[in-house]
Image (cartoon, rainbow, N blue to C red; front, side):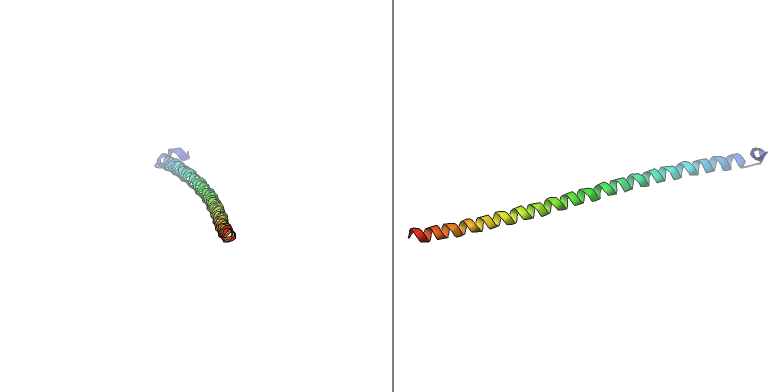
Length: 79
């Protein structure tokens, strides 16, 4: 039989070892892809937060400027 030929057992064992190693690599790659996807989602969330902060800051500065203009007008009226 095929199993009685010299070296067949070690070849089968070697193939089994290769399959196990390949499976581990595929799982590791899958985990890496999952982490990469998570990192990309986090970056998008951070970018959204930054854009929102910029918008809030812009509105705040506009309010400060309008307040300053109103104070100037009030001072002018009270002279």
